[in-house]
Length: 378
Image (cartoon, rainbow, N blue to C red; front, side, top):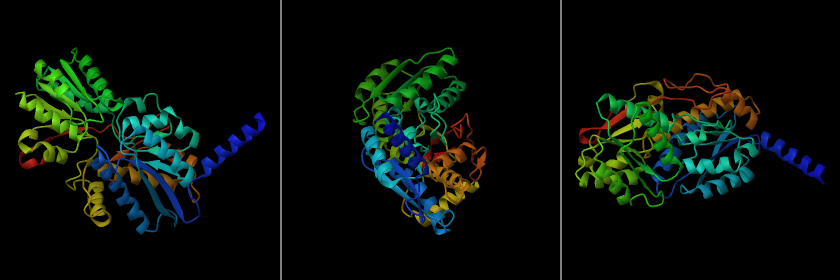
């Protein structure tokens, strides 16, 4: 009986490694993202950017004559849904690779249940910078963005050069928020300092931030780093300002400045800094941005041009290149091997580098600021 089970397990593993095209005419990519729920706007943008590039590739003849079909499932930003939908996707659609998932806790759910390992499949470009997904390295996960620790360290470094010393952190009470909190604490320790305060909110109630404001406002911080989603950030900024705080407000990259403007108003969010891990998507200063803007207008008209959409666009370029390099009959293992070999791949002025020992393709971080008339400035 044990021998039969072992043979069955080997057969399943072999089928998983060979999976990817249900017939010779298409290449299937799987994506699970929040198209409803608290961060539906981010999910929609993250799907749109990749969709624009995949549509361009299909219009140009596909990959080796095969069209790309992206199967997108909506998890509403709920980790248990991410887990169930990914398993369903793997079983029913037999994707060649997974792409563009969103959320720290959501991807951690896959890790804890060894979903990627059991399927022998790569997940490229999860929309998260959590260290829990990078250390220790999971060889099946390929990141195209810098970590939250990289972002918070850059913010602390920049603010400290201005002479600021009293820092607080507002964060989402889950692995995502705690990862950013840990990054800020680590950066402060390197300066020989500690946070003066921190305050958290429940990820399922992003507008209920009173407890966090009550924890942070009395400490009179000179700067507050926000590791939070759009609605929570907007609510927190408004309520902290209403307490009379003049603290400099900085957010990590998952926040969309247009959502802050819409939810809190220009007067309230003017001067808020936002760290970014992708090239500036609003001015065509480098080739990949010019290309991205053109493809979004052509294949995703009406969708938002944003940091989220350019991130998934760049990631889609990386994935397509890996599939091309994997040969005329790509397998899951072949795609993983080619991603691993993608050292200093130029997407158009923005390089991505992976290796056998490294699954973090970029450590680029820059800080932008919301300026006059609601414009984002570098």
